[in-house]
Image (cartoon, rainbow, N blue to C red; front, side, top):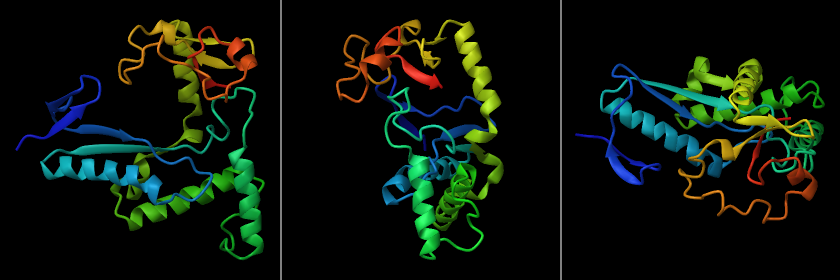
Length: 222
């Protein structure tokens, strides 16, 4: 029986043909760990696990990797000035209150003001829940990649994007991706640059937009 997937790029259903005959390499996005994962969050994690199990059922060896975002994305990404709620600060306050009421186990978080301890606390809670639900990658620590463990790699990739002309440093010191440098930008989503109305939601300030070469340019590093 042939496995078939819907290809979001070609907009067609296609036969699955692995890039490498000996192993299917699979990446799925993990949680941002400033709170406990809820049932809605786990929908995507379980869906990724079902895809993996299906591939394995049909005889493929799968190398599944998932990230843990334990740094970044902790405020509204649209605001380069750091505007919006600091989610890690809110998490620290929540953990402090939970410690006082006895909801946090002894020794789980010694210092709620330490963002690394907060991230580690929610990471362990997520992996515990994921294992209870049978998400296989949660039991493979070598395939769980934390953002904080890969900062150097991120910086190297961003440096290369700048050197290739795909990214630039704005006047605010923030590194932005230049959407105009990629002719096919928007092909996957179906939105061309002239169709995008960046800032229509009112979350992006005029000052922030002034630092960009194109309104749709997005932040890579700050």
